[in-house]
Length: 370
Image (cartoon, rainbow, N blue to C red; front, side, top):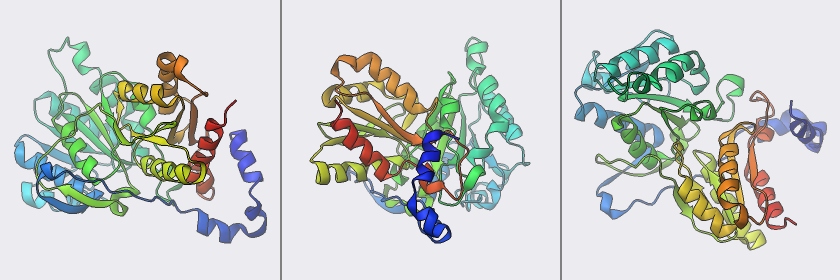
């Protein structure tokens, strides 16, 4: 275990007094969701949660592309989170169907489907169980175009998987494995922050000419609700979004953590009179270096936060790039507020996650550096 994690546990006074009661209160993940504001240019909107937005995107993909097929464990029944509900009834069992309980087989089948020119949308039931398919993704899907000299490719493959903490998932239903795949040239990796983003980014993934992995923060499946454009639309891959403009500190996150950072930005303004710029990375690979660099050159300070373990995480790559490109602009070292280097805990989940208090303390430290 990380010594920082152990020290955090040792210093928690309430654990000594009332462990069981305190953990029942603090174990649950709390996210103050901020809905997107939809431009009138998008036309008619429908109120959706993230599950409904994903379902709507899949519906549009299947209806506009007769070659598209959707498959995975329990997908024909609607999936464990109900993201594919009713789609088999609309498009038939030849296009929406269940697979054996074999992640390696699911991805291998998807590669074959995509290689033959059809659009393959594969679901891995939990991101925690994507690892049996790791060889197929990294040694086959990601390299297919390169090793054939662009004669063949499986660019019409999209792999969906629920990811991240949900409040009670423990070791095998809370992991955030995006950094493993961000190391692999030849694929694209996305994590949306809410329904509007999920629909547009998923449709972009499905139609992109490269294999894509689309991680869906499962804690937001039903807690994230907002107006979503009813029609067919896409959001460009590889482009981050500045959600809040600021002058003093750049806060970078993706997925659920974006909403934590937005709350931190508001708290920093109220408590410290510190102006924070919040960036949603959206695409993990290839990530938007230009937007990040321009922001850090303006603020001179940067904090990166994600749920995954800190060592070799996405934040490490971003921090290294910032040092290369913004060294003379930095007023303090880049800080990373992430998960600890331990298996994802159950009873101590509240300590593990980079919540608003850990991130706010980092803001205080970085503005007072030196």
